[in-house]
Length: 184
Image (cartoon, rainbow, N blue to C red; front, side, top):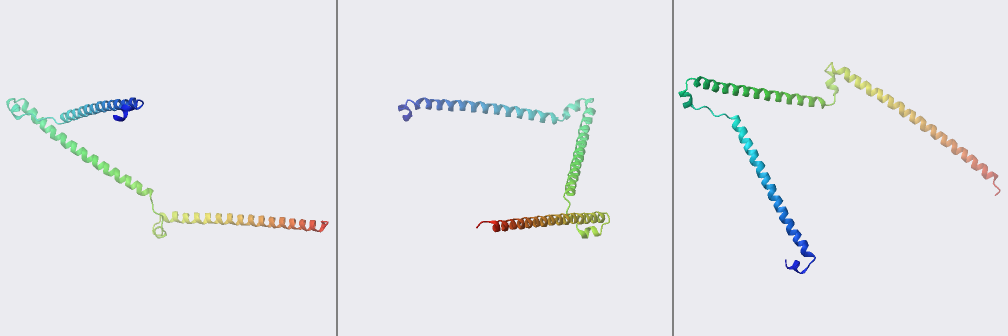
């Protein structure tokens, strides 16, 4: 405060800062009020949903005085038990299905990550042995193709080397001719 009182240029900036704090405080309070209202509304909605799911049992005194209502009350209680049993059975089935699905997914993942084929394994399994032999033959074919390519490349390099030697020999003979014909 003391500093801003003596500096006219700083005083307006200082006042804007104070006003800005007030504005942000008001905005913060408004936000807090909205959040509190939303939380209360959510809580009321949850309580309403819970109340709808849990029906209170009928009073025994009420059914005692009304013989017509008593059988309906009994059927209602039995119906609740049946629905509860059906719900439990459904939950058990869903849990079993989820476990089965999880096992299937694990099985599929295991099939995708097969270990390399071992010769000892293929020796004892007739279904795999032909596949293993084709694999070995395929390797031999690719090895043969690779050897052919290497031979061709070696032959090309030798030809290139011979041409370079020939060019160097021709260049050397040209240099000798020039040396002999030079006036010096």
